[in-house]
Each structure stands twice: as C-alpha cells, then as structure tokens.
Length: 194
Image (cartoon, rainbow, N blue to C red):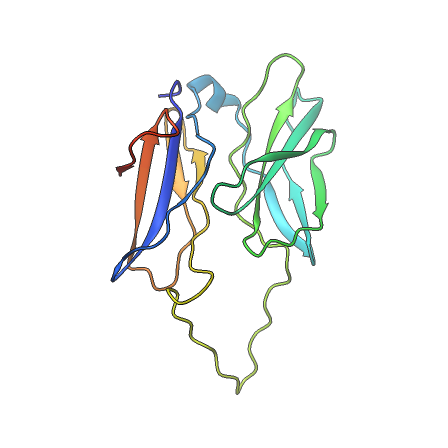
C-alpha cells in the first residue's frame, strides 16, 4: 500500500544461528501507478580511479536539473544530498574511501511538483579491483564468524512496479541462507519474518 512505510532487515544464517541484523533506518514507500509511470531508472555507477566513482543517468525531458543523493552501504546509513541542482546527467564523486561501498539515487527537478527518487544504484566500491593472486601464493581462508568484518551490508530496497518493493542484499560467504523481516508503518513495531 503506497500509504504505508515499510522497514526491512536481513541476517545471514549459519549452522549455529543467524548473524547480526542489518537494516536501513529509513522506511520505504511503494510507488503509486502514476509515480511508477514517471519514475527514473537507477543511476549507473562505475569505478573511475582510486576513491572516485562516476555516476550517470538518463535525461528526463521536462527536468531543468537533478538532485543527487548517496549513502554508504552500511546498516542504518542515511541518504544525503551531494548535489541539489545538477544540470548535467553525469558526475564524478571523489574522496570515497568506505570499504563497504556506496549507493546513489537521483530525481528530476521540474519546478511543478516533487518527483520520487530513482531506485538506488547497485553498490560500488571506490577502490581499485583486487589484482589476481600470484601462481604459487596460498589463499588464506577466514572463518566468517571469527572475522571482525562479520556483518552484512544493509539490504537494498527499490520499487518493483506499482505497490511492490524488491529487496536485494549481498551474499555472505559461509551462510546457509538468509532471514528477512519486515515491519509496517512504524519505527518501533514488531518485526515479522517474510
């Protein structure tokens, strides 16, 4: 229902139980049919150089500018505006150093009414891709439960048509499955497994 706000969280499940819950503090509203008709596609993001990502999106006919937001791919990270009135449809963002990566979203500005933001981009890291291991090197194996990095990134939620939301999350090595929970229209209600 587009009138309701939905919150989601996800945890990797291991043989001895679920891991840490990862969530977004911000709720999500499904688009109405009219909003869906005019919704933008998620921006394309690509690695350009160390600590620098390129973000691009399709031009919207009646837009005079665009608002661009980003968030770190970590549980509870909030969206914040990095450009409130861009005239271009392509931009570089520098000084990005999170090991978890970043997501971006954009919306057109047309002066008449407030458009919905696009779905979030896929998560991108702003660090060089790892080089392939040397022939005789041994790869280290790390028990995910023993690692300090034992946590998943927050789930990504995007609109999937009128009155529908799509959830995605990163895979976690060693997990036998995932548990997903939702709560409706409240920040303090009861979580329900879906």
